[in-house]
Length: 68
Image (cartoon, rainbow, N blue to C red; front, top):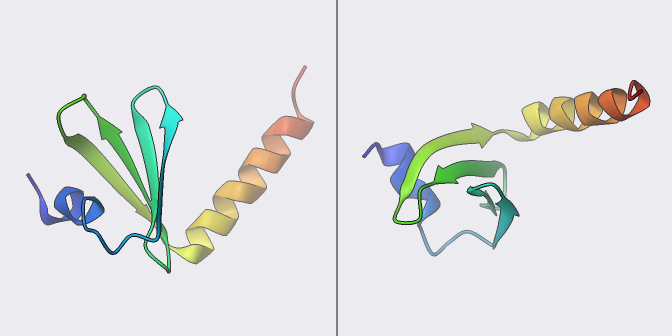
């Protein structure tokens, strides 16, 4: 397992929440970790730095405006 996936399991994350479909989000005080988990462990992880998170939030807003 990579150090990035292990990093999400640290106790120093300020907030961790299940989002659904096996996806968890964890806030480490700066950015957000998204992990995909199989019920036993994290299998994949993505770290969103604050500027990337802002872009994702704008994308989500734009996509809501384009719903049919």
